[in-house]
Length: 169
Image (cartoon, rainbow, N blue to C red; front, side, top):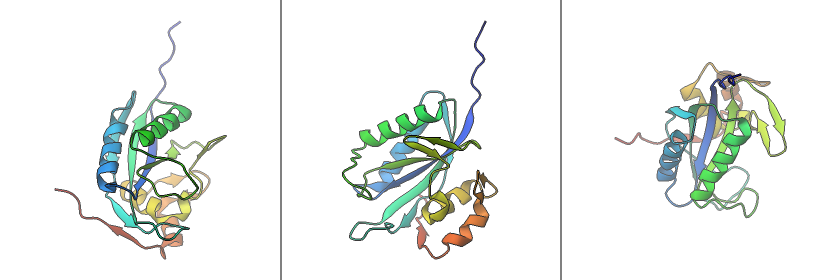
């Protein structure tokens, strides 16, 4: 009996960095996402500048969101994201530490996942302009499972400052 192929899933990845060259790190991370096995980079948002949340004395972040189609399982994708982060010098010294690269699995199809080390939709994503604004750029009518529409969630983060960066030519 031939195993049935796993169908691909649309997933969204949050990208961010505030150390080194964040714009280059995000571009390199998108290339790394495109190179993952059984994965195709569909599109990515513009880059946005945001202040760090919950801490002071750190450089601003550059954030974006990428959309992929993948046949990787959620856990395999999470491991791959952490590997990409590590290759970019990511360390986890303390909570809210500055980062050379941060990759978050925001959404994995319409699934709701609660496993040790993995929660999808990503917790608090609906409370953060640096996730919702670039996500709305890519998929304004998307529904966040258990939360609601992306566009509707934007009103709750309207007080958070986020500025688009000019597109590279």
